[in-house]
Structure formats: C-alpha cells, structure tokens
Image (cartoon, rainbow, N blue to C red; front, side, top):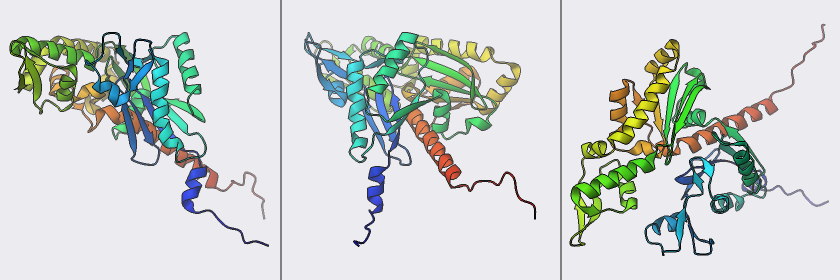
Length: 347
C-alpha cells in the first residue's frame, strides 16, 4: 500500500475560498484581503472612444483626463452611489478580483457596503451586476458602522456617534446609537465641488490655468504641496504657494452648505442623543475629508470634537475586512466548541 502524502500548508490556502472586502466608490475601487493588511486600489475611471468602446481603465484613464480627443470622453462607473456605466465597473471589479483568483481555486466571498438611496430598479441592476462578477457569494454591511470600525472605534459600545462621509460627489451623515443607525441624511455636495470651487478661485485670483488633477493632488496632500499652473498671457509654467486660509475662503459657500445640513441633522436628534454625540464627537471620513483645515473649520462651527482618522478614504474597506474577519473567527470558535449536554444524566 502506497504511503499517504499530505499537502503542505501553502496548498491548503489554495483550496480554501478567500473572503475579501470590496468598496465600489466613486473615486476609486478598493479591495482588502480579510486577515491581511494587503489592499488593492484602482481609480474608478474609464475612457470611451468614438464608438463607445472602452479604451483605457484605471490609472491610465485618469492620466488621460483633459488630454482626450474631441469624440472621446471620460466616464465614472459609479456616480452618486449608483452604477452609471456598468460595463466599465465590471471590468474594474474583475481587474481587482483577478488578483485574488490567481491564488485560489474557488471564487471568493465578498463583503460590501449596503447601497442606499437606490430605486427598486437600480437595486435590481446592482444585484445583477454583482451576480455577473466572479464571486461565490456576497453580503452587505451598514456603511457608517463599517467606517467607524475601520477608524478603530467600537460603535456597538458607544451610545451616540455621528459619522460624516465626504465622498467624491455626495456627503452622507449618519447618527449611530450602539451600532444602529438612528438618523441618516445625504446630499449632493462632495469633494468634486470643493475641487471645482478651488480651481475657479485660483484661476481668477492668479490669472493662471490649473489642471483639475493638480488641484486634486494639492487637496489630498493637505495643502502642503505646491500647485503648478500655466500663465494665461505668456503660457509659462509657474508654481503657486497657496495658504489654507485662501482655500477655505474659496470654498466657503460649499463648506457652508455642508455645515447647514449637519446642523439640521444634529438638531433633529433627541436631547439625550445630542449629549452622547457631544461626548463622543463626530467621525470625519471619506476622500473629501483630506482637505486642508476642514476639520478645524467644522470643529469651530459645530462646537463638537471632530475626529479625523489617518486614512479616511480607506476606512470603509478596512472596516468591512475587520467585520468579515470577526465573523469568521466567531464561526470557527462555534465549530470548535463541544456540544452541550442539555439533559445531563443523574448519578
């Protein structure tokens, strides 16, 4: 009889399905491995040619912005939380999931943020889009709860917490009480509006032409980097040193709209919930939270403590991965627990 040969431990990972956290954001698609610090990110951009065929995806499409021929156009697969171009979104999601499929035999499990504000038809289209992806199964989590977990908080133990997510095209505010959403509101004001207002103010004040990508990089750097521009009269390149006060003044109306909505949501809370939020503060997440001095402005006008994580744009995907890991550990502990003797025999 031939001896039994056991497979090494590395092969066992190949046979076991992988669980991933998937964030289909407006600005970028992100994928995180559960149980690992690995994270993949690709810009949510696609370039369509004159025949509406996909010519470029991801970072290459982002670099082609403002450099396209007349009949070509740049599209975003997800706009205001909805699928605007499902075909390009499917290509980008498959590009991320292909990295997981190379190391595993079976399709992975996916944990996503629960979509909000969708009509029944849009929700049906979204579920059909997920079924076409190479996924074994998928489940949803509350976005605000996952963002709080990704920021390192324990929302189930907090009586009151306000989570403000400043995305690319919209801002969502959710009030959590012991992990449950109590109040929620969203409006179409986001990071792109900040960029548009800042770009227009720079061009009018300094008489230069500034690329949108340069303003985005300056905004994500927290206002510490220099801003490159082109003079209108001579066409020469110049370097601008903008102060944070100039940026806040240029975006005063946009930030004022965000403050007005947040104040209205805070006044709708019960007195006990307001006291809890004043103790815990406001959690500021999303890519638009990286704007210079935005945290200080919100903290001064709201009169509440504003907490800004280290990587606010990645809090959602990190939180989804941590929740999936906690569920997997709970299932493993339940499987190893010996069965209880419900009816013990008396001696």
